Structures are given as C-alpha cells and as structure tokens.
Amino acid sequence: MVDAERRRAFEALLQTHRKIVFKVAAVYARGEEDRRELAQEILLQVWRSFGSYDATRSFSTWIYRVALNVGLSHARRQRERPQSLDVALIDTLGGGTPIDEPDERLAQLAHAIEMLAPLDRALVLLYLDEQPYAEIAAVLGIGESNVGTRLARLKQRLRRDMTGVASPTGEHDGTR
Image (tube, rainbow, N blue to C red):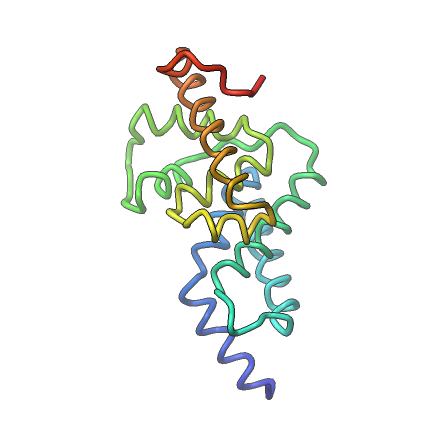
C-alpha cells in the first residue's frame, strides 16, 4: 500500500474506532495527563503495527488487542495500585451520556472494577462495550467458553463486592 493511501486508510479506521483507545487508556492509566500519554503510546503502537493488520479481519478486534497489550504493559511498568476510575470512565460505563454527578451505583461499579487484575479489567471493559464473546476471546487470546466462565465469575465477584452479599444462588464464585 502506498504511504499516502495507507495513511488515509489508517485515519479512516481510526476515526471510526478511536473511542477504543481512550477507553483502554482510562482503564490502565492514572490521571488525565497519564491517560493522554498512554493514549498517545497506544496510537503510536497502532500506527507501527498497522502494516500487520489483515483487512479481512475486524479492525475493532485488532485495535483492542493492540491497545490492551500496550495498556497491560503500561500497568506492569507502573506497578502501582490500579488507577481510580474517574468520571470519564464512568461516562463510558453509563452508556456514553455525559454525567455531571455520577450515580452512586456507577461509582461503586467503577471502584469494584478498579480493584480487578489488569486482564480482568480488560475482560469487563470489552463486556461493558457490548462486544460478543467471540470478539472478546479473539482480543484477549482466550477461548470463547473461557470468556463466558470468567465473565460469570467476575459478575458474581462484582455483585458481591458492590453489595457485600454472596451470589443469589449461594454458590461460591471461584474467586478469592
């Protein structure tokens, strides 16, 4: 692909899928400046990797995979407590509508998500972004049945963390 043509294709795809970059940056970075830097790092890696993108495959799956790999690497480098999910991410969790004063339940959910391991945060982010299990599996490199199992356990854990109550069925969710 000629450089100008490649750049136009990249820009068009990125325009459609740019929210993915900012969602991932919001989950794995602290503070506005850190999120901006992580988003730039993700964009740079997406551009560098664009030559390996197979246009017969879903761009959203590919960009999620690149963005999450950069986000996970960033989290490992930081070695800090997971970042606090602020209003920008709570807006995303609330369906993309601006929220001046976040609902208390969304704030609780954001706090419960921030306490998850980085890979589990990625799984929840993809789920909340309404990605199908097959897409989540492709992005994270795990089996589709594993996605379902892990999500079921994460939902139980989040429910328990938010309410302090065990699963409605009384089952153990397999997490500690």
